[in-house]
Image (tube, rainbow, N blue to C red; front, side, top):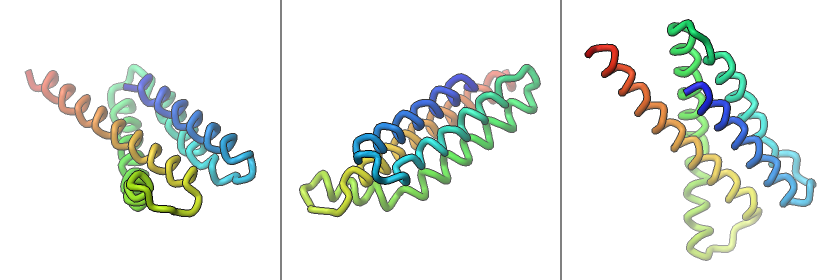
Length: 125
């Protein structure tokens, strides 16, 4: 899961860079996913250890941060749905970027929860 976390962080960084370039490099707030991605790369590097307690700690920290980011971007999900229905909203690139960030975080949380359940099953059997 540590490698998945690092890959997830890199994916978020690419999302931020793409959003920044697509806006004409005029809006530095489009780089927010890059900052979040850097944290996930850090979490993945710290979780890439043989010590199972440290690995569990860093993976739980990363999934908690991803869940908080997802919960924080729920309003962007609503705006993304409105945008998809054809409503005219200001800053559609920003809305789409936040919607993508939200979706990626949700998928990451689901993958981690699935992994945690499988790890628990393996430990008890």
